[in-house]
Image 1 (cartoon, rainbow, N blue to C red):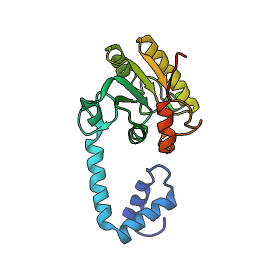
Image 2: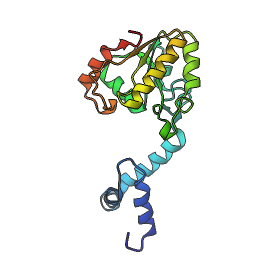
Image 3: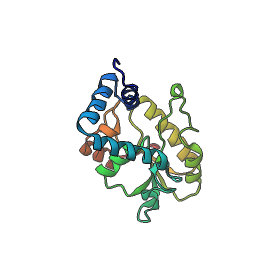
Image 4: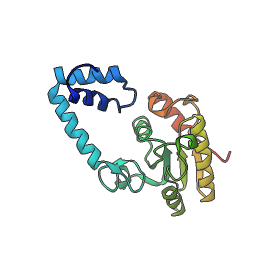
Length: 201
């Protein structure tokens, strides 16, 4: 970028770390904050700094949490016999908003993808295996996305469940193949979640 402001160039470059934000979008964001909303920019910077420092992962489900255990895992009214496995926190939020599910979750923070360096250890297999071995979980609801990697991950999760003597179910298709849960409309997701089936069938 032309001009003398190194700090402006650094701001634009820093904004490019966001997904889907290229050089032009980052430039528009930087100019908007500087020209129209400096107060919003200062608040964003402060909240972003706090979030980066204080948001970690729940020790039980791996969801984002400010404390050792997230609000869902700490809620005694949630059913510990049902454990829903999702790929991302966004998928967990989609299920929470679209369904009446009252069990607990396990967030993989990805899906099996050897090309991206994501294997079982990166997805928290040790923690999940321990939870299944404890004997409290009776149904593992597999809610990975219906993509090639998501299906491979679902198959792997089904094998883990069977090895632990836990019933494994998979979301019914109604969620489009190749789709992402985060972008599926609520009605479709609620129907798919309500019509889940056993992987043993």
